Image (cartoon, rainbow, N blue to C red; front, side, top):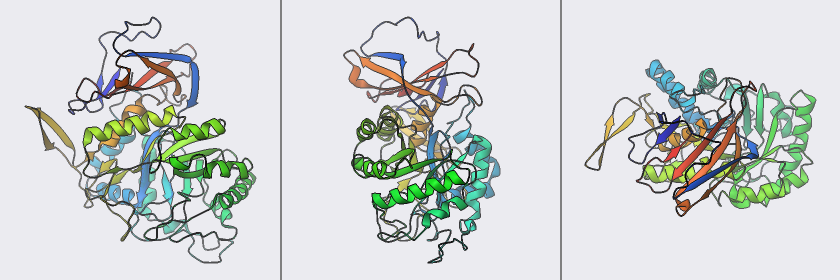
Length: 461
């Protein structure tokens, strides 16, 4: 089966059955661009694609396995408002975003970051223990987070049925590191798969929660945290380090791994500086450390198709091709003006775009497009706008979701492109094994066609 999204929006994650079965055994006729797949060369097992469920500001992420978004306070606030205004529309939206069923008419997003504490998309600044000097964390209170954050997560879990992982970030200011702060995190670990101590440790912005943490300090905290996690039954929880931009891939994260004595299982990257190939520079130095791409954002007022091409090339195909197990966007949901944002925050000049647009009154708009004499006419059919990043993530997600319920995720395999038009295609290739050894493996291609106005944009087979 093909899943197609095209430049003219005549196909939007459209399922298309091929007229003849794809033959992965006998080489096909060589065309102007020839895709050659080698399933004997296997790379990383994917964990998925998704976004962040923001509270109101940018907070620490909680992560599900698979395609990734972040659900911070702001995203959760908007989705909660939608639920109150129109519960049917709310659950329809969640199903369309997250349903992982093989072949379903849905995105199958499955990697969800949930910040713990305030961010640049929160209503106000808070943490879960605001008492200075409380090194025993007697005043730790997870209920400092808005209740709608947790209720929204529970609703999404009904679609995903995946484990969570948590991230932590500091508050406003320069370098701050309270004594014994690493003990805090064992108090909120429940059923987790991943955890991050600090988001963007090289970023300090006085307009929203952020904190400078040198690599040596993060390493010390990582060592202590890893020890506490192991001692309290959380040895299987992966501990992530760095969580910052590509352009320092051989700087901070290398220092962190060198000094942390095996505390960190993974290094995660953001897209706001450098290029995606710099993930490969880190992987060359530490091939046994997992790599994740966990944050990027679209901006308001940009071109729909250009955005899809960039995010597909750079994140949804590019990040895995440079060894990332995930590709993820920032806010899962924002309103049409790029909010709700922390008052005074300067992190998103011009306005960030969510994976979906939901208005702050709980309404949302779905945009369909009619083609007539090469003019695009927007027809507002309902109240939701599933934005361009969704289609890029969903196309990629279709290629790696388990074929069988509870089965293995897709593994990236080797692929090359030849022919005179090899420049026109960007390809990711995956093999998904089956629960039963007698069932055929699934082989998938995610293909971006750079010839913007010709044929299909990306195809998952």
